[in-house]
Amino acid sequence: MIGLDTNVVVRYLTHDDPAQTAAAVRVMDSLTPEAPGFLSTVVIAELVWVLEGYYRFSKSETIQTLETFLRSRELIVERAEIVWQALSSFKTSRSDFTDCLIERSGHAAGCQRGRDGDETSAVRSLQSHTITEDALPLNSGDLRVHSPSYALA
Image (cartoon, rainbow, N blue to C red):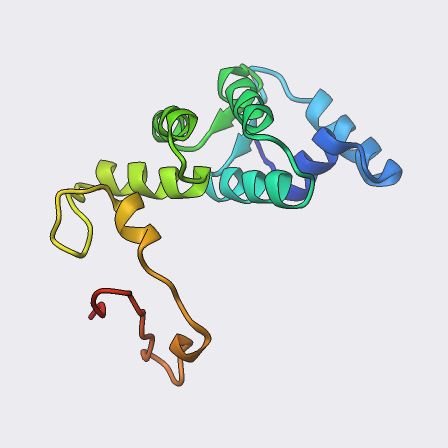
């Protein structure tokens, strides 16, 4: 098994740089069910962010890409069941994929509600929060998160 970096997967999908694309194609074409590539959840989240943000992939293109990777016998996706669940949520949600992945990961870890004490999903809870520039750490251990309705401890 070989761990795959986001850059390799992006080059493979977009063919935007001839030299890097050739290297990425060689790596991806070398994968087999016996010697698969490994995609971490971090790579999955970064991949979606790059494809949608920089390469302007549509939601349907993102869904098709993730489904292809999840079904591939040549790839192992870390926490594939959680990624499938996040993808399912993403298909029917206005939330972005990463929020769905965060929510499903939290659910799998036993989280049952957002910080506001409501029984809503972490996605809805997270969407009501913003981290402002003045909330950046001033020193070690000092991170303040601001919310329109309350401050997180």
